[in-house]
Length: 95
Image 1: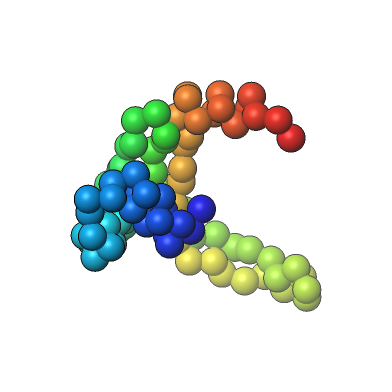
Image 2: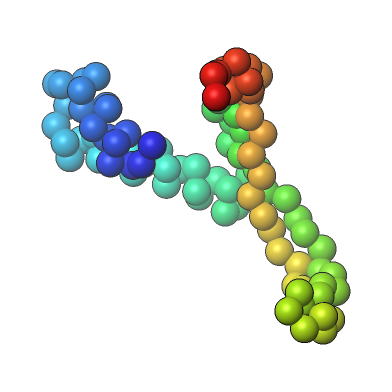
């Protein structure tokens, strides 16, 4: 689902809201999540899952094309843990 599809879905469910209000709500929601994660925090959405960041230590990697060793800097990466309900829905869905 894209951001535009989400806003269309919300507009259909809440016809009393104007398009600019829906856009403001969606923007505020995602901005709050991004800001919290950028600060190193954790975001938990019940029945969906939680987002957090993980520290990756600096290490020596290898260029797969040349085999040459390269230094990989330390960094933070995003981590998502699905909630129990989401895991069950995905596992029970038909392929």
